[in-house]
Structures are given as C-alpha cells and as structure tokens.
Length: 316
Image 1 (cartoon, rainbow, N blue to C red):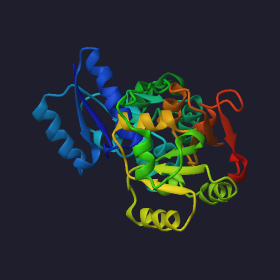
Image 2: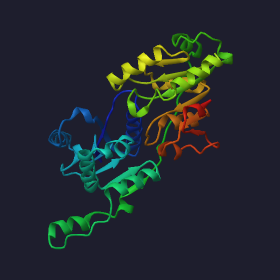
Image 3: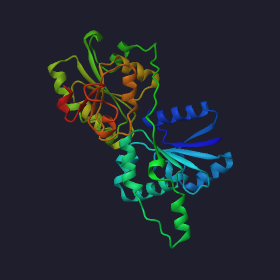
Image 4: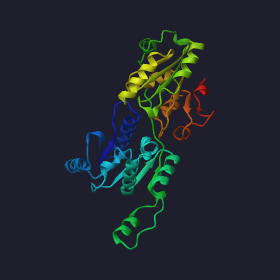
C-alpha cells in the first residue's frame, strides 16, 4: 500500500524522531510510506493534489491538529496518532478544538501512547450523541462511526538507542565550558526543544543553588531553538546562571552518547504525550527525574523506574 505520513519534521525534535521510526516500521512491513512535513502544505487542497500525483491510497498523521486537519475530505482513509500538544495544549483553544473533533470523527482510527491520552480524547470529542433519525444522512454518518472504545487504540511508543561509540565525553564537557574532571562530575541532562510547554527554566535556579553548594553539579540543556522569542529568554537566563549550560541540538547518536555519560536525565515539561527522551534514558539505564504530570507518570513509576517531582527543590 502507498501511504502518506504527515508530521511536523522540525529537526532534532521528538515528533520528527517518532515519525521517522513509525515510517521505518511501516516500510519494514512492506508498505511504501512517503513522509512529509505538515508545514510544507497550507491547505487540504494542496494535500489532495499531492495524493493524486503520488497515487496514494491511505494516510497517517502525527498530531491531530497540525497533521490531521490537512487530511480532511481528501477521499482516502486515514488514521491519527495523538501527540502531546494536541491533547494537552491545542484542546484548550476553541477553534482548534472544533477542528480536531471533526478530524477525529472522519479518521478511521486513532492511536494514543497512553490510557490517559485515550481518556482525554474520549472526554473531549467522543462523547455519546443521540443520532438524528429525522435526517437520513446525519443518521447514516452516525451509524458509520465506530464506537469510541473501538476507534482509539493504545500503543506505547517504541524507541531505539544507538550511542556513538566514538563520541568523546571530555571534549563535550570542554565545549560546554565545564572545566572539571569527569570522574567526580554529576551532569543532569534536560533534552527539549526551546518552547514554553517544555519549561526548561523550571529547574534552573534550583540546580544553580545546588551547583554553588556542590561545584561538581551541573545542569545541561540540549535542544533546538523552536520558539525564537522564548529562546532569547532562555539564553539570557542561562548566561547569568552559574552551573547551567545550554547546548544546541545534536545528532541523535551523539545525543544518546551524552545521555549515556550523564548522571541523570531530567524532564520539566508542563505537558507531554510520551517523552521519547525518558524512554531512551531508561533503555540506556540512566536514572530519570521527571516532573509529575500525566504523560510522565504514565511512564515513570515513582521510586521504581525513576523519580517524580512536583517542586524544583525535590530534585536535590
């Protein structure tokens, strides 16, 4: 089958990594999967033209709003994979909420990474509605829609870690202006795109205070500059904060090598779908400290597979 896969493919972000993994899985199953950036298309009509030109038979979108809205009315069956932003952030914006509800009605299926994500979607859009028997088309459409419990499937995200074996940890520390011996160094790593929902500044002051008490403690933030305005705020804050470093995005293999060498991975997001960085840290047997939000608590069992915190001081 020839498939279109729509996702936001901003480099070095969780969505891009997830999309590439799903694409690889679909192709390994024998399908032709054309992965395209949703931001390359401005309207469903552009998608429609692309579908016809490429003779595509079905489609999948990662993110109910950014990808899913472009697939409406194109005449081919499609499914949706929920992200984190669509269910946790966009759902609170009236216009986006309505659009996402219509997309979900038209979709043949939807995939949620966790039970809590499935429950959120059901509460928002798949409530029971009494069919309108007075209008045959409305009634037929209602009867054609699968029940909510059959439409949304829960499938945890899969990951793979491939640390660069040639990566030099000491060189990385030097480039990060951490001029200490690696032997007694405790680097806490935060991997995220620089945008407000990831809240990278949430732990900065707490780690800086800890660093001033114990100079071998460092917090290193690694990720792409997603929101230019917020990025300037982050850079300004980090520049004047002892014990905290900010590093640009890295190749996946190098990032996994950094993760493998760090003392622990931290996650301070306001909301998450399912953090690939947390899963990757677990795969590499690196301790995880994560903010206690539904997306993280679905993955991290407190004091068993990691630590959950609700206050910055709890990380110390």
